[in-house]
Length: 103
Image (cartoon, one colour):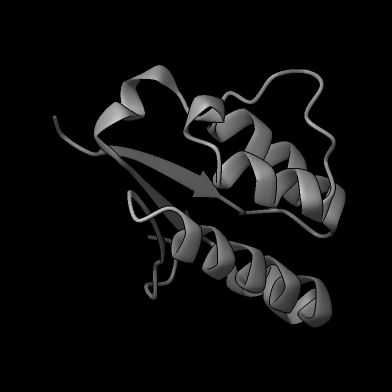
């Protein structure tokens, strides 16, 4: 099985609510997704919450994150901690931050 690649584009995101909305959309999370840090951690750490096509693993590519990181540094730090924790608990999950301008 191959890894599913999902792009999380944060262009225009200015706050946590926007981040949660983008994650929910990118990963097709259910309407009951709590849109908070714990719910994000739970969703990333639970393969049953991932898109069905991610049975072989999930690569979440985060792009256009720098403006959000600069506008909300504490929130961005928390998001990175959530991503890191989820990857430690789910070996089949990779979260990659793009370094290019708008890539």
